[in-house]
Length: 213
View 1 (tube, helix red, strand yellow):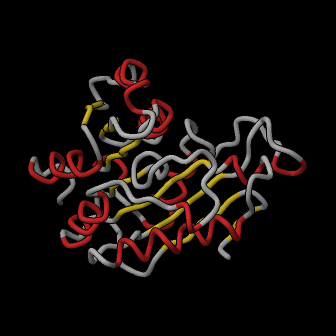
View 2 (spheres, rainbow, N blue to C red):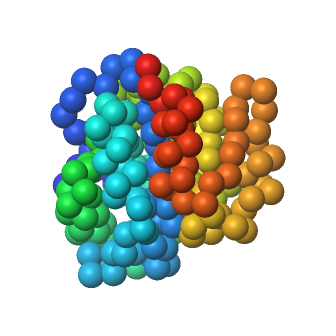
């Protein structure tokens, strides 16, 4: 297990990512179906097209980093072993399309969690940018050219706080409910867009050359 703190997970793959523009992804509702506290490998359901979209980024040399709030651990719904089993199932599904995740970061802290997990507004928990900034630090990613894709306004807000180029709200998961809140984070320095799903979001970024150096 790759715990860096009681409620924090960080796993970075091998590779030279220095100076590259990365793609940051939320997990539930973006890569996999949001089943409300996903803690069992048997419950993993990949959203159509996500494995191919991630593999496309891999082939282009674009680092793909998963950043996910996991309050289900803090609330006692499942544990880090359950989280690891889910991630293994996701990795296996990605491999069938020739894809992989170059980094995985998770935060289990939450104001309504129990015991040592009960920390409000932890710097790693989105909409705080801590997970993104830690990945940028460890992988030496070009943050200013990187993008985040999520299904909640908190994902888009985290990207802005981390100094990324932009965020894309997908309409899978919770996305349809957060459209206006996500768009409110757009500025001259931070683009916010809407896409139907991860495949569509990646296609737009790649075809416009936004992630290639």
